[in-house]
Image (cartoon, chains in turn blue, orange):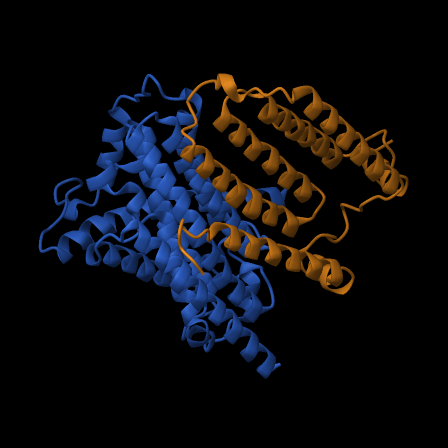
Amino acid sequence: MNDALDVAVRLLLVFVAFLVLPLVVGQTEHKVMAHMQGRLGPMYAGGFHGWAQLVADGVKFAQKEDVVPKDADRRVFQLAPAVALLPYLLVLVAIPVAPGSVGAVVDAGIFFALAVMGVGVLGSLMAGWASANKFSLLGGLRTAAQLLAYELPMLLAAASVAMAAGTVSLTGVLDAFEWWWVPWQIVGALVFFVAGLAELQRPPFDMPVADSEIIFGAYTEYTGLRFALFLLAEYAGIVVLCGLTTVLFLGGWHGPWGADGLGWVWTLLKTAALAFVVIWLRVSYPRLREDQLQKLAWTTLVPLALAQIALTGIVKVAIS
Amino acid sequence: MNLAAQAAQTAQSPGFLSPSGVEVAFLLVGLVTLGAAVVSVTTKQLVHAALWLVVALGGLAVEYLLLTAEFIAWVQVLIYVGSVVVLLLFGLMLTKAPIGRSPDADSANRPVALAVATAAAAALVWVVADAFRTTWIELDGPARGTTGVTGEILFRHWVLPFEALSVLLLAALVGAIVLSRKKPEGERD
């Protein structure tokens, strides 16, 4: 019975993290963007610097009418937000936070995380097709094109780490980690992070939801809670991407000191720093055009990832 | 007879009667997979067919998981659900797939397709059942399908087919590039 309780507690903790962390990232985005643009951001909700703004937004979304367009494919339209959100919850289960602290140990963790993250895009495609709206369809098309281009460099960069560690388990990668892996795998880390940003459709890779061209892409027809679920999926995606980059390339719970008891602090700190970079990029760079997006993926990221794999192989053979 | 003794007896002499929980789950998931596959080839709504295909391929991944082949299961999700179906949907979106039924999605090949599918299914079921009739996977022991085991078997015993397949894929890739690089009219080499 103890085992069942242990599993239940772990899953509950993961679920709480899934509910809290995306909101924290969202609120940070409000404030960081505001300060980078010389304004204050939300200041009233909750009192202290508007900390409850996203909670208030959630209440607002819950009160709105849930509209399904008349010509839409009802069931696919209603199912899409769940398909977009749930994969990130599943990936979060497999990300190790500290030695022994992981929702569930997955033997092929890297493959599991990347495979399930790829499924999330199906939600956007379903939404784009089922909305019976030309803007939505364009958004869905751009989403699919972007995923096809950026899935490959992401997988190659992750494969480089798997080669270095000699395992595809996320905890196994962290057990094998040494500090000099950071400079060794830095190119792979950049490729992975950039490709992940593109997969999440975050600026500057937000062509699929470009508001000045196609309104809000695949999510144009959504209102109320279902729309909020799509937004939540985006922030959950940021948490998952930053967590994965931390675990694969930045050593996760390893730190200069306090690796025994304070491992989870290191993981959270690194993830938070990466999330800050994600927000920073949003306010710093203009949106890439569709052809620039494809060019970046196929002519820059894929060759870089392949070069990283070659480097990893050479060093691996040299030191063994 | 208490439960432990029964389990021990089942482990000693596996049979089709008294199935274990995993076997029951395997059968149920198999039925769902089969149902989704049948719906995906019979539905008149094109995009729904692609989405039912997701269910069928995902069901196959769950079957791999139940057989402890974890690595194969995640690769199945990554390649088929994550890439092939996305490519399919991408293609469907380019063809202006309508919402609702496509009246012209019915082809005259239905009876032939049914005959081919039935023959292929019968042959596969017969061959697989005949080849593995007396082989049983021990599900309780150490996992047989972990990444390490899969990798060792693949690169020790099956290296030649693996390499041959990769050459085949490379040829397909080169062929696709050659076909897509059609020169415009009037341009000479």
